[in-house]
Structures are given as C-alpha cells and as structure tokens.
Length: 234
Image 1: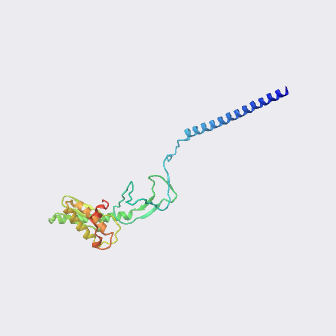
Image 2: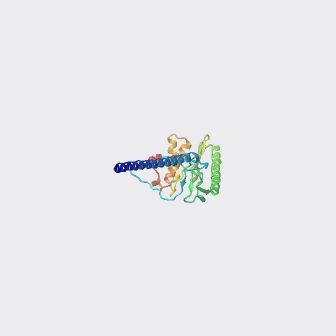
Image 3: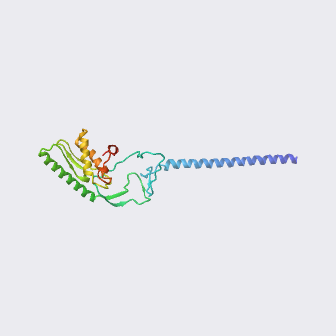
C-alpha cells in the first residue's frame, strides 16, 4: 500500500509540474502577444507624424576628397550632366556657406554669393555688345553685306542684314591668347566655305579660338579638325 501511495503521489507531482509549465508558457505567450499588439497599435496611431519634414531624405554636409576608381580605360562621363554657364566673366565673393555637419535637404541654400560685381560686369558687357551692334549698322549702311566684330573674351557680334546675333565666347582657362584672332578668322572663313550660316560659322570659330588660347604659342596652338569636332557644343 505504501508503494502504491508513493507512486500515486509521484504521478500527482508530475501532473502538477506539467500544469505549472503549461501555465507558465501560456502566460509568456500572452505577454508576447500583448507586446506585439502594442507595437502594431503604436505604429498605426503614431506612425504618421505631423512633422512636414517627415519622409524627406536628409543629408549631412561633410568635407572630403573625391575618389574615382578606374578599372577600365576610356572617358568618364556623368550619367546626368548639368552645364553651368555664367552670363559674364569674373569672380564673386562668398557671403555665406552652410557649415560642415549641417543637415540639409534638396532645395536648401548651401552657398550665397555677392552678385553686385557680376551685375556691374553684365551691364558693361551689354554696353559693349550694343556699341558693336551700332558699329555694324553703320557698316551695313555703307554697303557692307556682312559684319563680324570680335569682342575678345566677350565673344563676337555678327550680322548679315537678316540675322544679327551676339556669339558668346567659350569659357576656358586661357594661358596664351597670341593666336586667338588668327584662329577665329581662319576657322570662320573655313566654316562659311563649308556652307554654314554666319552665326553657326562664328560659333565654330569661337570653339577654335577657345582651344587655341589654352595652349602656348601661335601656330602650335591651333587645333586639328578632330579636336574641334570633339569639343563640347556651345
């Protein structure tokens, strides 16, 4: 009897232990479910922020070197090219610059320049072009059929009585302007002989002159036709 009673007590203990473990797992499962439900509710209720900046990608301004790794030979071209052209030549003073480490978004002002000097240069350039236009009109009244007036770094003014245009000079880093005039005149004649209009011929001549001033010397600075054809378009 004592043995049977011991077995019964042992079986009862095992059942009680299993019940406790089962209860413990149930409690843990309920806690996990409550935590998960709370997270879902929080994301649903508070996920949409009233902050108008929410969802806008932000970037940190940092200073560092531009590293380009070349694994193959060839020409590097940007996927999206943006050509920036200034209406007048000359430098400008930086008034303000966004501090390094500032968080910015697309459209934020990063640098502010003093444009007052550029405005003065622009007015001067406009006066120069107007004077060239007036001189061309006087020459046309004397019977000249077409007029090309070079303006140095400001380009050239051309007119044939029907089409009048200011051809801007190509912006390059000049090192020697010795052959600039000869390069422009010769290439202008070449382009006209090929049947181009006067403005197109002047644009072609502007490219040739621009290439020549980036090199030292006179005849040695004149580019080949392939170099001119590969030069960026105006």
